[in-house]
Length: 118
Image 1 (tube, rainbow, N blue to C red):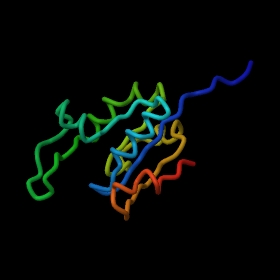
Image 2: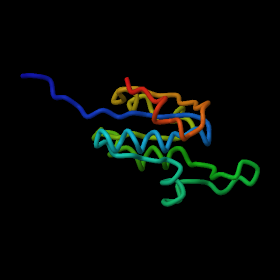
Image 3: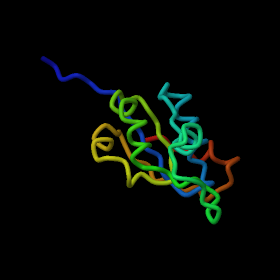
């Protein structure tokens, strides 16, 4: 029996404002992958422990985020963007095609011209 192929997951990480979401949406649009913006689902589904005024962001509840994404990540076919991925379980990495630490140093209007998909 041939091994069953799995749909891939791609994790895109990077500092705020670098274009992770823009890049992820472009890739999702071209590949049909499901785009998951972790920051957005944290806010929409209250997967946090409150608001941090200093950093102007939610204090995410990592366990709640992992629980929320468990079935979705197991199915594969996702591109996930967030500031970091250190709290994701190792099993997510085993389904990931790649983990892309993303740092943009050029203006966003040049993103399309400078983007190379491997």
